[in-house]
Amino acid sequence: MLADLLKLLRGEAEPSALSTEDQKLALAALMVRVARADHDYAASEVAMIDSVLKRRFELDDAAAAAIRADAETLEAQAPDTVRFTRTIKDTVPYETRDAIAEALWSIALADGDRADEENALLRMVVNLLGITDQDSALARQRAEAAIGSQ
Image 1 (tube, rainbow, N blue to C red):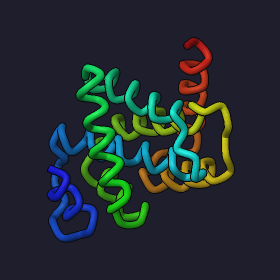
Image 2 (cartoon, rainbow, N blue to C red; image 1 turned 180 degrees about the vertical axis):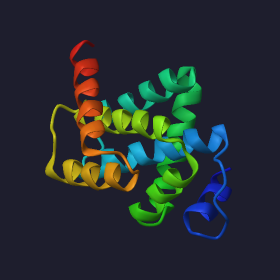
Image 3 (cartoon, one colour; image 1 turned 90 degrees about the horizontal axis):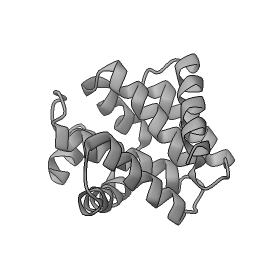
């Protein structure tokens, strides 16, 4: 699975619809990339990644942690963010990409510090995912509200 997704990200395979397992891994790796953008991969961000994976894909703690661990490896090996997001944009429907934006915002907000690096990466990523500025702002507001209610 990891090798197949890396081939797709590197342009060594033709894009097609991502399997559910590859969607999980791609989303997790993108969340890891956002969390690492400020060079502080905080425990709160790790916990938020696991929480998003558990909620979104109805996983238990162990399964979410395993996907995140694979995603950490994938993120470290994945090519530039442009190819990474293009693969997701080309293979995932808009409605799902909008939910991805909300998940990414929740990671950026998880440590209570909106670092400039995370903001810059998120602005680029949501644009590359084909998400409108308005939908990104709404996704950020939903993420803020969810974090505020925890």
